[in-house]
Image (cartoon, rainbow, N blue to C red):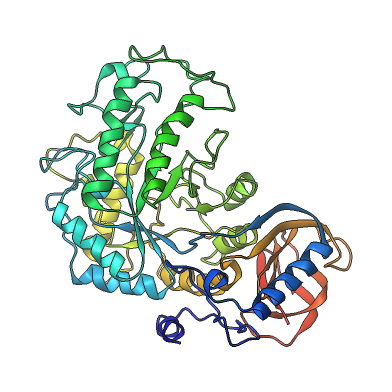
Length: 497
């Protein structure tokens, strides 16, 4: 009862959610960090009801793109802008962050991810890529996150180093160690996963981050080019122990396995970004969450390229490269495929990082990102009350209602993806619908104690769908119906009555 009241106060009880038909288990609409209700409090009647719902789906759904049992899934995730870096004054979490974390928790966020701004990659404050700009401040922020029942991930790359870093060794890098990622303050080189010297440097530093700052896991922006297709001459310190292939990054798989194992040994979470919409070309899934979308300008492209990826995919639309019709559109492309968009929040992204004295920038003429960030800085100075930008991928000019829209959709999504839910994604052959679904229309089903049918129309015309079950719209709490109209580019989440 106490837990139910907490969820109610936190604004996490979903409209339209139906309590189990027993007195034993309470409905849970947000991931819990302890044992889930299905493990600790389901009664025989709860288990019977769940199994009957699953049986209905198993007997009705013959073919779908993906069939998955949801376990250990945290859908509500945020990339939290801790502060500017490079900067003249390090971040120092205070009451602003307390209030922001309260808002994020109340909006269903349970996983907080910090990007490079936590560390001192340019060595401006006596640290390095693996040490905090403000160690006491980072630990204080970690405690703020934990106090609210959320998890914290810190950025640690298995490949990227800043060109000119005194620790960097030429023999770790294929070809000449010049920057391959050159924009704003970044002069990034990619260290080779087959280099023993790089491994001997990277792995203890990674353990140091885990031990010194106590995060709940790591986020890896891998900084890697497929070894098989890499045209550059081998690094001087390189041992090719594995057979590489276009579809198998063998040396990288070995390196990632070591890091992943260390994180999991500590009960942690490992999140990966493998460029654009890519997934790692490994034979084993060595991540819990995969970030996609960076550098991609169309939501349709990300949806089509990631819908077959293994769980769990966390899209982040890159507004530097494209636009959306409205704030709702991201959810149309993600929810039917058991994905939920990353939220950008935290402290305002001021653009100061593009104007720090002593940092060698390119000219604005040659650096689109630098021009954008300096434009954000001018905007920030003249808009003290916002709305604000919250990250390098965020829209500019800013979108004013992003957090509220994200929380509203997450509130509807959370009941669908509780622990123990079976998801049937992009159903192509079933008896659930009267006839084939219209062109460009997708139907997915999520079932546990309750069953949800998700209908998405990716086409440009209105379509009609008839179901065999009586369903109610979770947004409008509509009367039960079997006849559903979907406007162009629209999404409906329906619950079986």
